[in-house]
Length: 190
Image 1 (cartoon, rainbow, N blue to C red):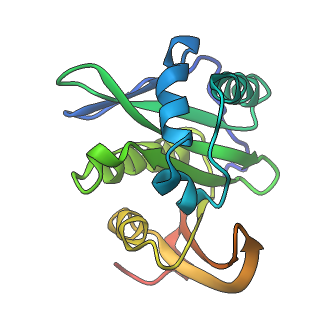
Image 2 (cartoon, rainbow, N blue to C red; image 1 turned 135 degrees about the vertical axis):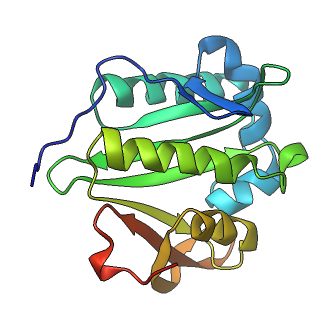
């Protein structure tokens, strides 16, 4: 069994019939700012809303640095029908030794409940397990976020843990940890 990660040397473009996942560019800062300044979006992230465009620009620079250092990959989610960037998805942290990655994502609320994020998570998960050679992918969500739970379950993730009041954002929140493994021998069948 091969134990080494195969981190891409060039930023990968991932596609399905309806969306493309591409590198996020400096020109995308206004959309990233719009997402990260939306309380509905940030509430699920457990973070404060952005107040300046500079914060979004710094985030894009951070994502580029993660890729350059082979520590993460963040894609922009683009609708093929109109070439509109509507969110982001990717691995916010990759543990090379244990071949495990943390999955994160957000989507413009105008596009919620349309299957876009389910499709994006599928593309990223398949790429991570098959091309990068990850052993497992983890997602940390608030248990009350039913839409996120459905996205993960549709993509074969199973809940591994539930932590009570383990992080604070305006109040104490619980976390539900979901994961998907390359080798499903330890996971329930879906």
